[in-house]
Image (cartoon, rainbow, N blue to C red; front, side):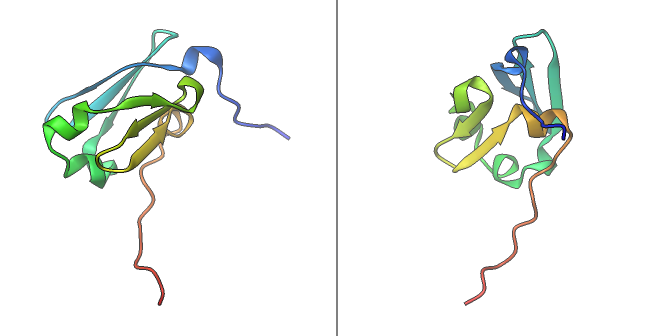
Length: 90
């Protein structure tokens, strides 16, 4: 069985934003760029909230505390947009 274990070089080095996308620089030299529309919390966040990110998950994750968003490099490398959140059943 294959696992999706992250590799050491896939740790987050930096995160930057443009008006319609964001990029994650990895320690192995790669840059992942994805559209903000894939991540509605980031899309609707202010530029200041987007800039307030922290490295999480032993270096493989990114956390935005003000908007409660968490992403990881494994998902980004596999092109995984945010799941569609439905309403909670009462």
